[in-house]
Amino acid sequence: MKQLLSALFICIMFAAPSFAQSSHMEDGLEWYTDLMKAQEKSKATNRPIFGFFTGSDWCGWCHKLQADVFSKPEFKKWAKEKVVLLELDFPRRKQLPQETMQQNASLQQAFQVQGYPTVWLFTMDQDKSTQKMNINALGSLGYPAGSERGKEQVTFLNNANGILAKKQG
Image (cartoon, rainbow, N blue to C red; front, side, top):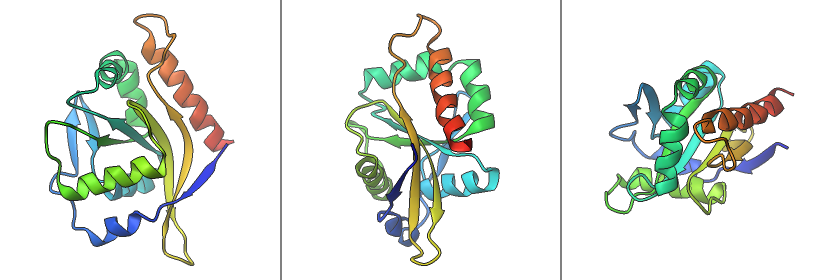
């Protein structure tokens, strides 16, 4: 089921200057931290955004998802072909730029994220009449509980592909 979320927080993004570091490479993958930069890439490549809500310096399940899924060759290949990666971090011991914190909190509220790790697949488009950005939420994922040990990436990717298939359907 596709759900359209009005993204009022996007006004902040257009008014705010570009973030100092809008992306970083990790384990061979480019992770954006600036939603509007991720949106530009998404639009240019016609791939949805993969929003990873994490607590990078405190969330054990986030680290487990990264180790058991994101670090695997199957995920890396899939991510490079299918999505634009966006890291939405909520650290406790390090300080993010104010613009990044505002953006991440706005997205957390828009998607009603209550636990970590949470992944949302989504697209964005601009309403031509109001000029506001809208989020088309495709579906969400978490740690692939119940997976065969050592095969978590298989379950995760099957679930993610199921979400993407609905987008095309």
